[in-house]
Image (tube, rainbow, N blue to C red; front, side, top):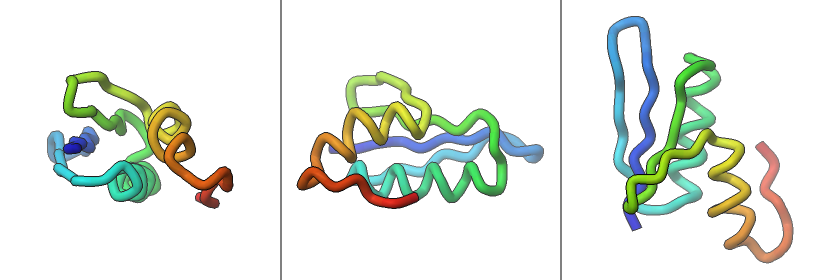
Length: 70
């Protein structure tokens, strides 16, 4: 699966493509630490999620029952 993480910065938008939901979420949270608004993750079907919704749908659903600390 491919995921695209985007963020709006003062210098313009940035986008990163990742291959796993865990990496996409980690990248989104890292970007949100620096630019706390307008961070989103898009799945391969074009659906757009904020990091918390993405975590609930993809990362926690794929875990072994234990949520990863942020």
